[in-house]
Image (tube, rainbow, N blue to C red; front, side):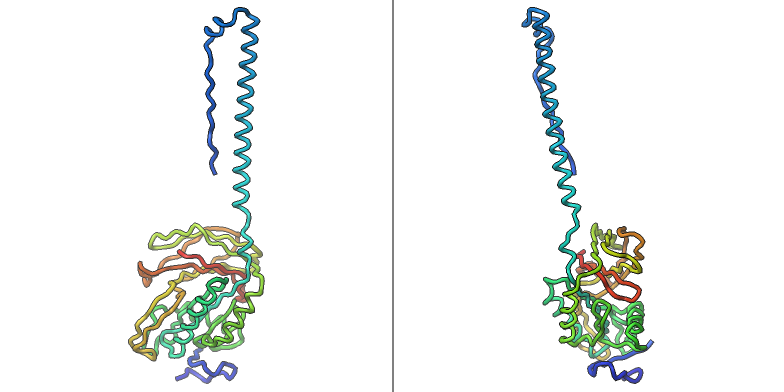
Length: 311
């Protein structure tokens, strides 16, 4: 059932191959005697002058206290602002991003989908981000994958060129854009994740001010580190979804997938910060739980930073 001869270098369990802040005001009130009262109390011009001088001195003293209080509060607020604007160095931790190319029409893919979910669960306290890209080239086998997109197939072919081949296969896992292997191979999956969790990232990605109006999602982004030759890619994912497959090689099976990429945008990094948006495709249901996975990728497809944010 292969489209063509299998490359010997590809692992033996590969089944499918294809080509192609604010300040508060304080008001200090002082009871003042009227001029009439002062005259009635003070019997001489000298006494009046003395009281006036005393009153002026009192008000000067009160005014000085108010200025000091305002300055103290203002400086305190400034300190708080500076503290809030200090970069969160805890984000500068090693990460691993696993991109799985899969298909509901491929009989060898369900085991890889199950492994991806296991990886997400076991590494939930680490900076490990998983992405499930559903390709479209196996739709001809009898079942059209509801999450498949030609763009994801094209993306996999570009990776294929990077790795020196003219073929692609499913399930294929790629870690940090640098190494690939059969997506159901748990040993290699853990080995490569462990390897990259020991490497300090070149970039720190921050996604914030995320707003969902039901049609599109807007967000602010900020990148620390070199931007030379790099792009920010932001994937909109459905956190988990089950599909009842009715035809094809997986007919009769209920397939479960995690972090299914349904849309992805690529942002050219002219500036280190900005605002962008991503359209919500029709296949996303109101009840679906969504997240963003943002990652920095250079022209060689190496990934140098990543982050996940719930929506």
